[in-house]
Amino acid sequence: MTDTQTTPNDAGESFAAMFEAASPSAVEVGGEGQIVNGTIVQVNRDSVVVDIGGKSEGVISIGEFADAYGKSAISRGDTVDVYIESRETDDGLISLSKEKADKMKVWDEISAACENDEIIEGTISQRVKGGLSVTIRGGVKAFLPGSQVDLRPIRNLEKLIGQTYEFKVIKFNKKRGNIVLSRRVLLEKERDAMKEKTLQNLEEGQVLEGTIKNLTEYGAFVDLGGIDGLLHITDMSWGRVNHPSEVFKVGDNVTVKVLKYNPETERVSLGLKQTQEDPWNHAEEVYIIGKKVSGKVMSITDYGAFIELEPGVEGLIHVSEMSWTKKVKHPSKVLEGGEEVECQVLEVDSRAKRISLGIKQLEPDPWTMFTDKYKPGDKVGGKVRSITDYGVFVGIEDGVDGMVHKTDLSWTVKVNSPSDLNQKGDDVEAIILSINHDEKKVSLGVKQLWDDPWGEIAEKYTPGTVVDECEVLTSVEYGTFVRIKTGIEALIPRGEIPDEQPLNPGDKVKAEVSNVDMVDRRLTMTMREIGQRTPEAPMKPPPPMGGNTATLGDLLKEKLGDKLQAMGTPEAAPAPEPDAPAEAAPEAAAAPEAEAAPAPEPAAAPEAAAAPEVAAAPEVAAAPEGDASESEGESSKE
Image 1 (cartoon, one colour):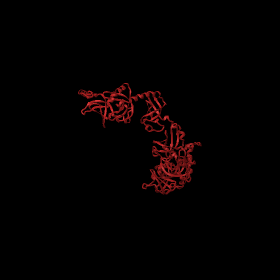
Image 2 (cartoon, helix red, strand yellow; image 1 turned 45 degrees about the vertical axis):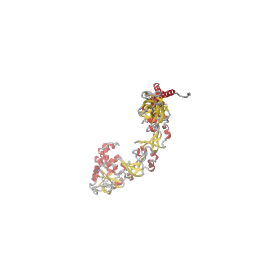
Image 3 (spheres, rainbow, N blue to C red; image 1 turned 30 degrees about the horizontal axis):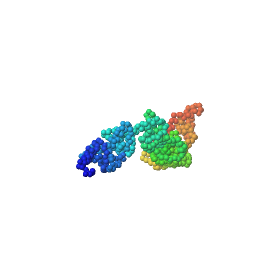
Image 4 (spheres, one colour; image 1 turned 90 degrees about the vertical axis):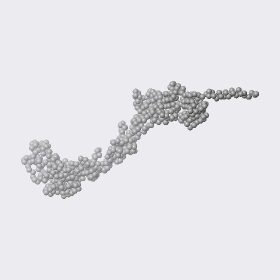
């Protein structure tokens, strides 16, 4: 027998050794709760099959192999440490977990880091309910609550996925495998350190660099390094800022100046425009009075519009400076917000930071054109623009109006209300009486178009004179105004008009002169009993209007001659001759003078003028009133 031959006993021993080696007791397979090394034998779409050397294989979700970016870089044959959760199940598989194995491997490290207050670095991998999932050492997944992400709540957490930060472990449970992280704790600690350093050097007037942290309607909060300062909207720019978002956005770097600092409350007021030159410092040099400028309409108020000439410099166009000719009720009728407009500088006050602007100054001044074209005494024409109690306003030129006072409307009629003779829109011709350059006012007169007609009236239109064609001008409450001829008007009181005869403007009527008041220059007519009176002889013309030939004594003697004559004695005042009534009045007036003042002193004349009968003069002057006119008509008839 050779040496290579095997005896039956040797063969039995080799088989026993092989059986012993293959028996389960010889297979070193971990039990539940242990970490073993396995080999990936199959990679499916949703799972990974791992062989750990036992009779069965285990299945692990492919999601447990994902990295911080959610991708799995594994292939068949790779080895991996897994945690045995349970032995074979009904389907013959072993329940395995890679995440738990990774956690158990680094658990001691994490526990030590938590106890020693160490920092753990991790990458935010995905958004989960209530916060974020963070991949830390060994691919272990930890939970980052939303409230612990930053110092302020972050609305969009998805933008943080893939970012790597440092975290602090604030809670962990080895049995459950939970790890809770916080980034806010580290940020607060860092902020406190920066705040302490910033406060040591912070003082008013200091220029600092900061970051826009938050925007509100009234300003922006700037992070100066551990402490926030308020940059108010009024301190952002020398110009107008409607909302801070027009200038900044969150995260912008900005250079600001410390305006106020209260160490007790740790409140800091900042300014951005204070780091720049005030544009008003050179406003008077740039914006010279009379200079033509352009700008943008920033805002419109009831009294004007504000124009931005440059950032930080605005001027006001007052509503009165918008048009020479139109009465602008509201600036919005002329300008619109955001519109580019040209204007002229009228006034500059750099201390008060005010610039007055005007639009109408870009066009010729109608007043200057008017004064160059007309002078007092010239004849003008226009339409009645408005009527007041004291006169009529006539549009002479575009932008220039003149006023006709009611006393300058007629030579022969006392006008109580200008609307009795004129209506708005009527065409009127007048003479320029005066021009007030300081107040830019023009006085006009209508009656001055004709010479004073009272010389002709005294001769041709004595009481009892019949006029066949009198043109009706207008009717008022107390009577009707008629025109006898051009420049001569008269009043027919209501009581002197037949009830059955209506009078309309433009009608031609027949009337008779009933009373001529030479003192008050009033002409009264009647339409009753025409032609039954005998025309009187021509009268003495009154003195010229505005002349100095008539004295108060002359007027009293002329108006109250008969009454003064009755007061005298027969010896002192002989009866006047019938053919000389005018000369009798002065003689009659001498009688009361002699009685009141025996001594021939000049002071006796005023005493004579103070007779009670003088108070009756205003009654005679009340021609426009219907009752007074009727009484005058009756006295004339007598």
